[in-house]
Image 1 (spheres, rainbow, N blue to C red):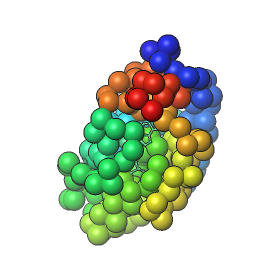
Image 2: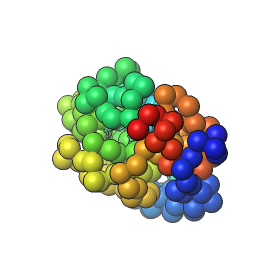
Image 3: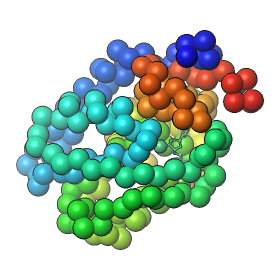
Image 4: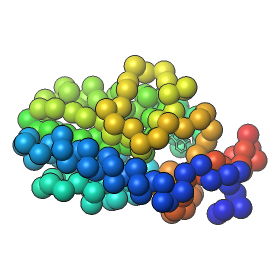
Length: 180
Ligand code: IMP
Ligand code: MG
């Protein structure tokens, strides 16, 4: 997989250090609050999610939902499909939405408004990566791990056409791999 990368943007050690910091920040934030639900937005967030929840030193609940707007492309279609929602479980709860990357912001904007309609008590958005240069929807994460340039990145859960999710670092994919 390394051969398909133009370069490594973030190493596993850099990621681990930042994930530990975010876990500490969230532990402090929810220390005196009702037990939060950490909600994993599949599939891209799954690796970050697994590391993050173990960096939080508090009782929490975990849930999963699917959202996809890409298919086999590197540009968001803008059409967000929420495959499974969890209306009853999240009503009245403190929800921490865990995303891999915020790009156009359409996915998170859609999920956010949907959650607020469903009556969550509070909602915080945590993203590992943020590509603010490509933002179209008016959303800002409450916590972001790293700001990344306008390049297509893969690894640590992030895919191109379902590949590279199991690559342990985060790399910039060679444009020839996706015909760019
Ligand atoms: P948005 O709706 O444009 O913000 O897209 C968010 C989703 O697109 C993320 O959750 C990722 O699954 C995917 N995505 C955006 N940029 C990248 C990238 O550089 N690499 C891999 N997936 C990406
Ligand atoms: Mg995603």
